[in-house]
Image: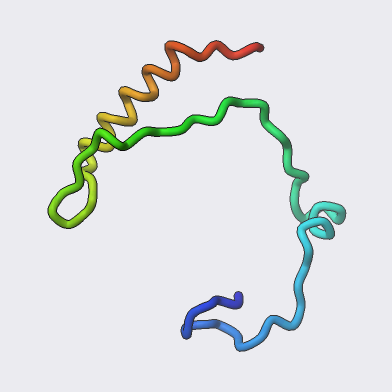
Length: 78
């Protein structure tokens, strides 16, 4: 792998395989488009700790509230 920092495993990349080639020859599966709504989370109500991070408990509580709201208002078209 070629990395962008000083800890690169190799100096240069001498060969590259495009994803199209890998899919065509069966090394990867083709991507599938999923028809689903985009969920956007709103963390504006959270207060950061003194270290600038959110507490895990606050994050989990907010995610559960927003997921419950989303589930109550979204009905899939199956």
